[in-house]
Length: 404
Ligand SMILES: *Cc1c(COP(=O)(O)O)cnc(C)c1O
Image: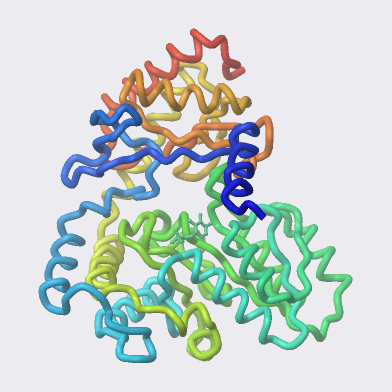
């Protein structure tokens, strides 16, 4: 077999389908987020405004976070030096796990190298090791959960997105004595809609099922202490597992689960994706902990974020640019066409210094292509005005569908 030809041919097919991914080559600028330097394909540099970062609150450049990272770097050096089991457990990991358990009011927490790994490892371990476990998975769950469940080889049923009645119907047909695990998210990142957590917990209780909630897009963002949607709604104690990331609103990197001491100890003891990998650098753990501690006390970032998102929605409405109405911080501007979507993204970057990544199939269904904006506390009203002016010009010149 000609291996290289096979690789190239597969990539050509992706390009033909319009699904080939181009990465924007960026250098973020500390102290001037959301500005970044874009190294373009012509080899030039230009300053762009980033509109699609998951560093939702700008914590990635917050001086409190950076100071904690600098201090830990000076104190402990670069890497953790091992897996958690073999010399790699640094005191900063222990402190961070305590901070996370407190954030979600759980007995215990367990750190992973990313949110993806935390979902993959925790779900695959729980579903594989609970005897005859059945997993119930929301239809729009993230790839990391789907892969974790698949890897477990447990029986899996997909329930309709955010539909507790469908979940109840599925559970009613199952053997009441088999263990069951319901996996879902709070904020779904592409539509920005939010799960009916209380209703799903009611169904779970009725059928004695465990609940596993991915709060990746909500931690730091919702609730009086940034504990997520479950905190905001007073539901944290009803969830068996709350999973989150340190790489989005907390601005650093890493992932975690929080749950009972026994459950965390179980995953710690059996999960390959936890055991056989080098622990996060101590400085990363220290920075993430500082970020969490700060957002537990400070509400100003969350408040400003909501103001900016509200302002962007108001300006889009005034300009007749269609966007999904949702209760979250995510503002999806709908293009409804894959070619326009990619071209608009290129046009914004090249002509206007505006960076927003196009979101096409398979990330979203065909015909619902969009630009996903995540305005934050560090985007100014002037920048929002300018963004909407650019979009209005482009919408007019392309004769794109306007909002009703
Ligand atoms: C981004 C994401 C993850 C993975 O988190 P990382 O820390 O980026 O690996 C998990 N779940 C959802 C819903 C996500 O959007």
